[in-house]
Length: 128
Ligand code: HEC
Image 1 (tube, rainbow, N blue to C red):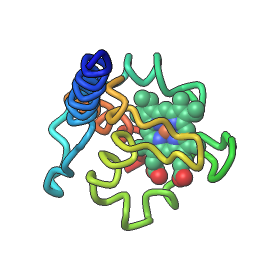
Image 2 (image 1 turned 180 degrees about the horizontal axis):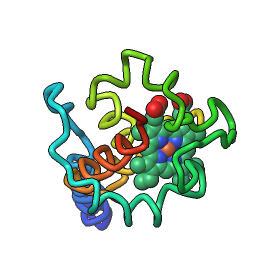
Image 3 (image 1 turned 30 degrees about the vertical axis):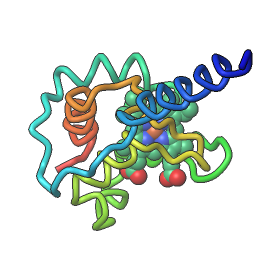
Image 4 (image 1 turned 180 degrees about the vertical axis):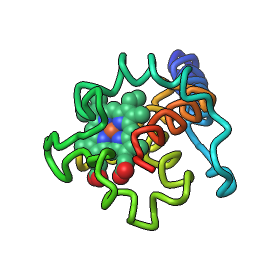
């Protein structure tokens, strides 16, 4: 009977582990354009993203897979996937692990509101 507390402890640890992992499940919001504020996204970008995406958004940094995209180039924006803000939400939330892009939302480093503000800021690199 001396082993029972150990079993209980293990069961409790399992329950705890599932509770901790639960908030990491993100549902993709509908394909609505972001209502984020680029002015609030700018300092977040400067703090977390410039090392790989460059301050001017021109990217070109290759780590392990695809390089960071050049958001200054109109050709980048001609790709229809970037017409949908859900694409950016997904990248920033879940990362692009193979290429070295961090899963900022999933890891809890950025809140959904931060991500919206970052999307709005990234879109300011687009030349009209
Ligand atoms: C360690 C380097 C690194 C950091 C730091 C980083 N990224 Fe990335 N990011 C990447 C790479 C590499 C890609 C290209 C991924 C791919 O296409 O496979 C990428 C892609 C993206 C994409 C998809 C863009 C597109 O147009 O295809 C978005 C959006 C993005 N990053 C946003 C951010 C934001 C916002 C931050 C800061 C909170 C950030 N990244 C920080 C490396 C990084």
